[in-house]
Length: 341
Image (tube, rainbow, N blue to C red; front, side, top):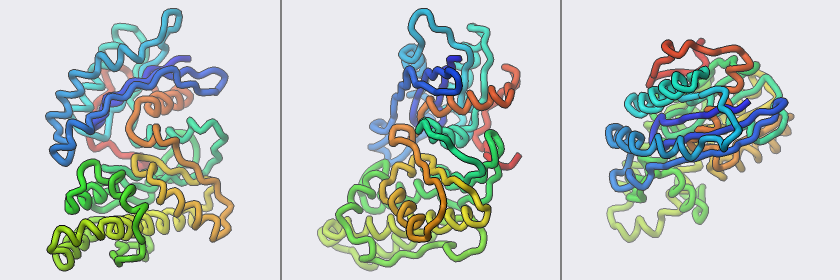
């Protein structure tokens, strides 16, 4: 079985070809055209400009992902949400036209589901039930997964996502975009206990998050303590390390509390912030310190950010569950959620 995946939810235009034989996954091609350089000068994604970039790139990207002669595409899988409306529409309508032309089924995929399934490229057995922490620029959610295709959202951010908090902090510090990788790099040279930032909702009994207050605390911290630019530059590694640690502490504590409550066997990391090495190490250290019998799995770095391979693989599990929607019924949903069904 060969599946062509298409992903255009935000600022990456991606197409990927995966092959499944006897339950084994092989990525034949995974093409990603990033728009990061386009948006660095703006400090963030501009939806209309992103849509224009997708229009220019989607056909060339898909052409590069097409199979060689002798191989036939059996299914198409495309992101239908969540994401930017105009960007999603370009991906879905292109996929719909191709599915109609090639006379093959089209699978509408939840982008967040794709991030979870990026972990299956690790080629190891993943045991259920599991808890997945999806953490990215647009989402911070804890999802309980009892089997393939069965999700229950048990926690989410009430305001900013963790990745968004990183980006806004980087903007305050004049570090550039995207903020997460820049802050992480600077934090490697800093003392993560140098400055004390709040850990919002870390003691609340639920599994929800809030990062807007942390962002505000950084704003006032900078106003009160660093009026001179040269002084701020010297302290950037310590500020970044301390700020990053505040986010990590909340993510780790809340997620491990969910793991214990629901008595799961596996913890998955998913999303762009899952690439953060300090986050991974903090999870691993806490799991070992608490002597938890827990399988901790995270995607390879190339599968943390948006890509079509994860969309194609999620499509495969839709096929196994026979979750195939008629071609004309698949719709874009920028607010699509996971785990509320």
